[in-house]
Length: 149
Picture 1 (cartoon, helix red, strand yellow):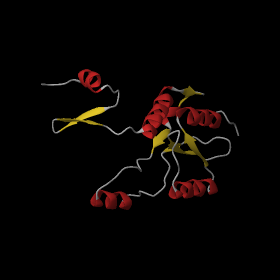
Picture 2: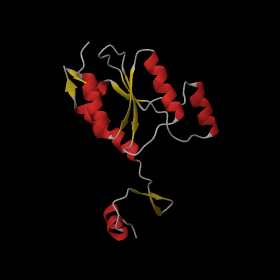
Picture 3: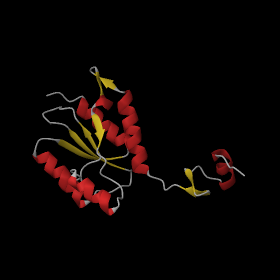
Picture 4: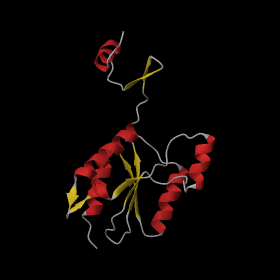
C-alpha cells in the first residue's frame, strides 16, 4: 500500500515534514533557523530598493552541517572557517563595507566562534548582526539598506 503525504498527515495527526527512507516513514527534525533564513532569502529575491534586487547581493555561506572526515578535511582546505556567519549582504552602506548576518531561530544562541568572527569582521569595517527570526533580521536589513553615507 502506498501512502501519500495527505494520508500520512491524517493518519499520524501531524503537520511535521515526513520523508520515506527504506520504505519507512520518518519525521524530519524541524529546523527553525533554516526556515527563517529561507524566508529572508525569498523576501530578498522579491525586494528591489533603488533599482537593486537585494537577493542578488545576499549570499549564504554554507558553513553548517555535519561532514564525514574526508569532506571536513576538504572543506577546511578550501577555506571553511569556524564561526563564519550564515549570510553576507555584499552592499556597502553607511560607511560599512557590507553586512554579516548570523541568523538564529527566535530562541537560538551564538557560539564562541561565531562571536569571534563577528568581532573580527567589525574590526575591518563591516557591520555585523545576530538576528533572531525572519522579522527581526528583515527589519535590521531594511534599516541597513536605507542608511546613507
